[in-house]
Image (cartoon, rainbow, N blue to C red):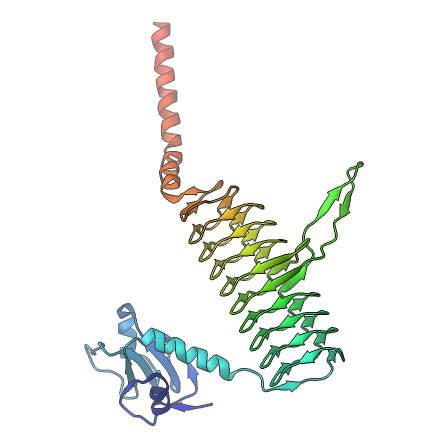
Length: 346
């Protein structure tokens, strides 16, 4: 699909400098631009590329003034915030790639399931008994929606996503390929012989509105009650959220983070990749946890934590400085010890 500079400027309310009728059919980085592509320049660090780019259209800030000649084939669209406007176009472009409403075959939809309007259901999708699917939902091939599951309007389940029985997914959510929502929590109790017996996991998972779940992420159902992800939560790929965990509004977890059972994570918390959070603790609103940190205790006030066990980042930096000095300190101790021995001999 092609768009002219005039059409794009109309969407982002920009001023055209050049050919208003030039058309583009794709997006590209400014340094990788070619004919028919749309790029943007927001950071002056990349300004040199605009003088050699092959893109047909470039979105720039209104403050941009060329320091040398631009390519003759390049049309500019000036806006107040080039980065924000390009992001707006990316969102627009992404929405255009959505599937048209359709129920592909073969697929299975229980007779007791309730299906909303304008939905797309891909081939080999399974929708169980009494499931409720909202309007404008997209469920891609090989996805599984268990019995009694509710999925809100405008939510997207990508290929191979699995939603177990009784789980609730809100509106405007995105669940990426291979994610598993509602698998059993890790609940086992040893008997008198030390043999582990499974503790049935009879709760569910509740995901509120505007949540995004990365590919191959797993969220365990509660032993009793609910594992809860509040609105606006963002999870990267390969995240593990255990049973009865609660993630507060607009909290973000990067790849390979693990959160143990019954932990309560506050609002606007940010957790770096491969960090681990122990179970049955609370993390204060606004806390930031650096990658590969381990948090074994409750965090009672907003802070930035680093290390294992995690401590305030400034304390960690001081400790690490001392750790790096250990070889030098050990050498000096050995030298001092040798001098004492020599004195003793004398």
